[in-house]
Image (cartoon, rainbow, N blue to C red; front, side, top):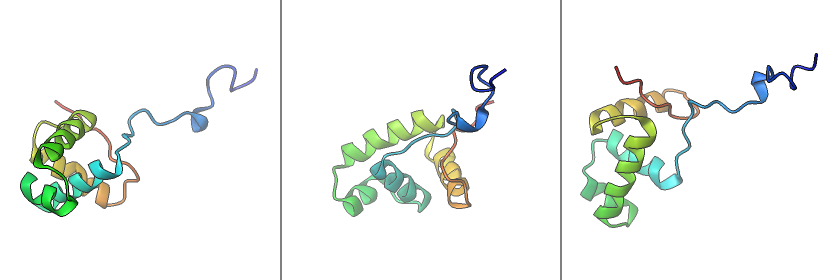
Length: 91
């Protein structure tokens, strides 16, 4: 039988655990990893602090983290060679 017809061609299927970030979300994540406050990230990116907060909310939801520390840990893993950040597994 045809492997594709049976849905067994896993190489062609997207990895459902990978998360897509917008360029700004990625920059905000880098700022958090660097230990910057929302106000500092906003200044560096030339956006409003409220916009940074909106990006933080989206990042935390996408990456399944609950706080800045967990987000920084995910960012560190991303910097160590992961092509895309992966959601944290919540216990």
